[in-house]
Picture 1 (spheres, rainbow, N blue to C red):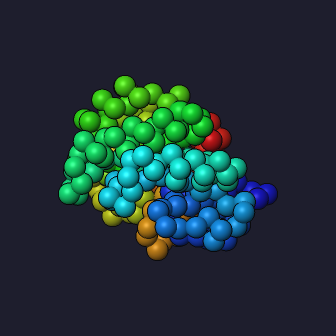
Picture 2 (cartoon, rainbow, N blue to C red; picture 1 turned 90 degrees about the vertical axis):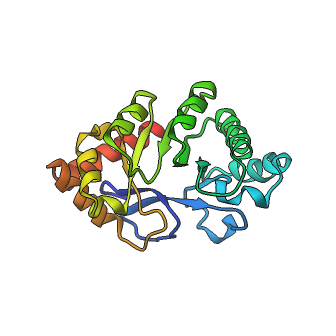
Length: 219
């Protein structure tokens, strides 16, 4: 890429667009053989998938994938109070994967639903020495401030286009602490960049340069 790329920090869509540097989220049952060998990806056990595995099988499942040079992050992993899986089991899976992140010194991409307080407690007790990225951020400004104090980066997605309250939050988050993403949405990351630059009152190239710096710092 000769020019500064658009960085999609978390996506479920494989895209060969040369202007976009994306991190593909890999889930249980998906094969990395389906990806270009140079395609960056994250791998982790999502809270929704916990019941598909026994906790003792985490090491076997994840270490195989995380050893690949194209695996640059552990995730998405985390906590979710809107699912039926016992919360204590979610915490066990989460902390086990944080140990892998610490061992491999890879950033963590976080899924968190109605569990922010528990997330912060776990971070205090399980520091990995790597970046934690809260993906799909759509919470309050106060929560954003709390996460930033704990060293989190915040990644914003499609909701930034239409949620005015979230736009106000985004305006207050420092540029050196943000990422942008498409997640599982069929949307061009350029559209999210355009809106983000508009909210911040800056040129897209300035935004692209700062997010690239954030990426290089974290990865």
